[in-house]
Amino acid sequence: MAFGRDGSELEISVLDMQVRLMERALEHITRMRDLSKAPEIAKKALDEAREISKRLER
Image (cartoon, rainbow, N blue to C red; front, side, top):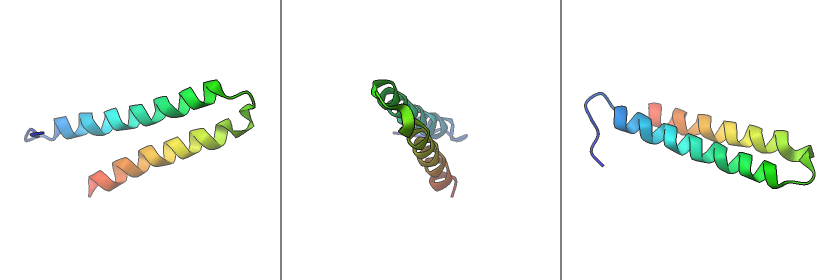
């Protein structure tokens, strides 16, 4: 994939990865009968999304 000079395509790709990560976490939570682990799943998804951004900012 070619990236524009301003990096907008890369930024869109990163945001897309983060959105998919969050969607998977939310889908998992909605299928759960016992929601006691929902905060843990949400925190893990947020941490992973932040890690994606952090790795690509270097």
